[in-house]
Length: 340
Image (cartoon, rainbow, N blue to C red; front, top):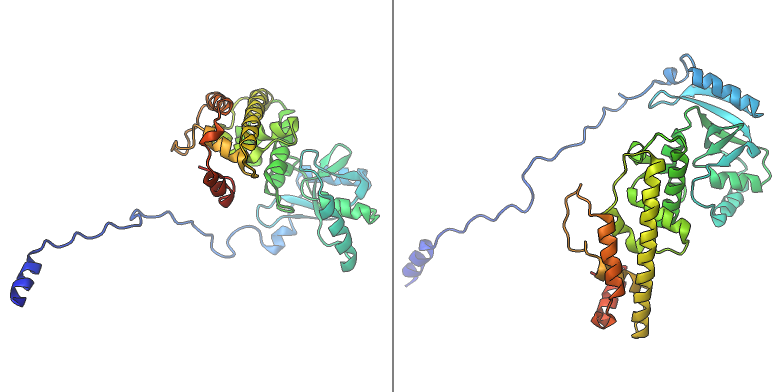
């Protein structure tokens, strides 16, 4: 009997090997530079003939009542930088960055005197007869509140560097509103030269959706950008025409988004009348009227903005609160607003 069972077991076809769960395709590895192989040596940082732009910058610093403390080449790219003492009233934040956080500035004004030293230079570029700083707003406010006469700055001769530094600024974490407003202000400033496009400054702007959403916040400070950001991201691309032209298209897109927001707000009102109370009602409505929520587009594929938003406006106007269940609201709250 045991022998028969063994023969029956051996007669079974062997199991097929399980398919590998991970991709067997070779992964691209980041090539890391060998330690100590990039940039300038300490001696090279302190040597070299100054560029004509650097010489002109030193003249601007002195004309503004400042003093060049040192000039050197930064160690990674070899670009000239001036370490300078500037009259504090000659340095302003860039006009296109986020709003000042008074709480953050007040905290700095409390901490700096405890150290008894100002050891964190701001970064600045020349602007007219003064200077603007893309990353020193709160330090400037704190030192001004403390009555300081002078601010120490790392001053660079390339004005466009302000936009790049602003894009990388991590002094205070951005929320979507802060970032979008910062981006639209940068876009307006860049548009003044009349030649550059969004594509030319894609790094500085970070995402085309931020330009459109920034316009919405300018028109309506209470706009709920977070509810629409994912939709706008799937529709917007960086424009190739001069930014003075593309901003007109963005402005029209922003107007249409605000119309959608009004329709969604009305739909939220219907939910409230039906007895629903939650801070996630707007994301629920947006998810239900979003025609892209189940669309799996390729990385570079974008949906048509006008067609998408028009469908969402139509859906929001026809929104039926009876199709929403209590568990839908509970799920939305549990996952932070993603109802679908």
